[in-house]
Image (cartoon, rainbow, N blue to C red; front, side, top):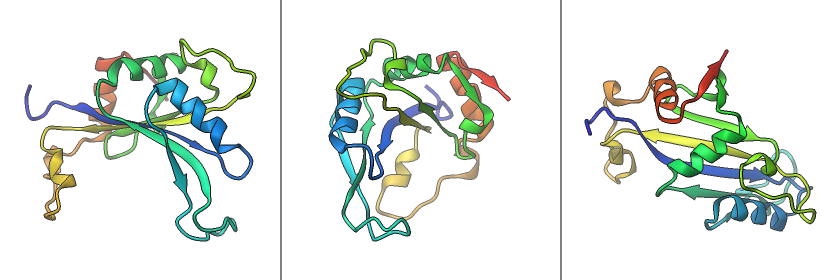
Length: 164
């Protein structure tokens, strides 16, 4: 394990419900897919979309431990293909899953209908704890993860094909 090795820090699944989708449905979908604890996200202030403050608007779940087999399953739903635009410049990548039944091992539940969700994968290198500390310090420029590094990591680790 070198200091330059990239690893998956966390995977965040998110369903934005807006005002139409019932929160409970979204909650069950995330719970069934991941088996973790789901957090309901609320609006921080009255936004331009005229949604009142503190109204539940979606839900998300963050997974940190033992997530690689789970991430492999999610990528199978995308047939292990990602686009260049799925990667951002700071070495994270995200993709959407149109319907939760695309994930292998998930069964269709008529009560829930068809719901999709977003998957965000955050990558890090050893030493990224500096970001989370209270004392303000910066990561070295050469130690940040670049877009190309993230793409290489995804190809090697998960066997992803990149489409233009």
